[in-house]
Amino acid sequence: MSRGWMHRALVFASVFAGVCDGSQQNTHATSITTAEPFPLLLRGDWFSWEEGREVDTSISEGWVESLGQPVDAAQLRRDTFQYVFSHHQCFVCVRLLVRSWNILEKLEGPCVSDAAAACRWLEGRRQSGVMLFRSDPTPINCRPALHGLFHFAWKNKFSFTGECNHPEAMVRSCQKPGSQFLIDSQTFTINFKKCEGVGNSFDALREYTCLGDWKVGRNHYFAVANTKESRREERYRCFVRDREDDLYMGLSITPECSVLKTPQSSPVKFRLSYAKHEIIPPGCYLPHNLTGKWESSGIGEAQVVINSTHITETMWRGYAAKTTTYTCLEQRGNRYLMAKQSIEGCQTEYVCWEMVPRHHNIVRYRVSWALIYQDFQVCDYANFRSGREWKYDTLIGEFMDW
Ligand SMILES: *[C@@H]1O[C@H](CO)[C@@H](O)[C@H](O)[C@H]1NC(C)=O
Ligand SMILES: *[C@@H]1O[C@H](CO)[C@@H](O)[C@H](O)[C@H]1NC(C)=O
View: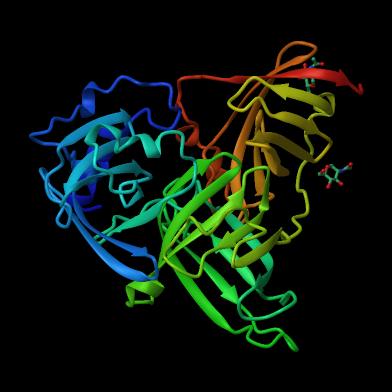
């Protein structure tokens, strides 16, 4: 990790903290003045695609290259800045939304003669604006936007009719095997496969770097750069997923997000399905008196179902239920080495469950970090979150079969 990266990440985190929940309206951390109207987050060289052509925008602490120095500046929210620029005989209002360190969204009003009225046109506007892509981006983790291994079928409404559904077409957004866990990949790949009889479908392996993700209503957007493409017009793209049904995904064919109203109406649309997992035979039994349905007091309040050899854990993420299955592999005392397979997971991981049955309908338990090798060392106390500090979650029985 370079120092430059760390510095930018820290600036971003400290300036931007609290923006996601929108609850913090306290703006002292980023207050702006007309003398220094552009905070660090907005400064830099930006690329955008506007009305069919490439545009470069350079923002420094006091001015925007093509627009000059603003006559008025205001911070509307933590992530939203608004400026009025004088332009010949009239005034233009420009609103900048910070979508990530790498991505700004720009809304621009018409040029009007009354400076005080310039921003009125933008009030209450909900349409999406022009995306500005930072020229020297810092890649971010892809996991919040897209995580897992999927098969896909796809359509491109501008180049072919019908749907191309090839069994080997895959989307892969996974941590690199062997990399430190929880440090995830900043790129993902889409392996396009040509379909017999679907003209203009093609074979290609595309690799994308993640630049930022954000949510607007039901839509979850994320902006990417194609790593193998140097032409800027072809390099930057926008994806959208439906938060209520995240197996639908849309892609733009220009460096724009505003063309993506829903995944289904996007220029390129993907229908994802979860890739199948390898089948792992169980190697041990869980205590008979744990069989049944439980609710966890841990993060996410998972529903937990236990039978003689498996634990399934179901959690709601957004609008979708995600299930993780654990297969018992090896037991020593209260510790169970288990194979972990998430429905959207990329590979089998190994975790250790430690369970201390206590009451009739309460079990204290804790789960270790996930590792990628199968070895009872996973159950080493150092791999539990709190080390030798015994901090447990509890399972509360819903009803017991025994
Ligand atoms: C236990 O649950 C797992 C996962 O749901 C299932 O695959 C397995 O067949 C079940 N085993 C028994 C003995 O019911
Ligand atoms: C459950 O079974 C284990 C042995 O497998 C035993 O130690 C424990 O006391 C039992 N708990 C209850 C509540 O019956």
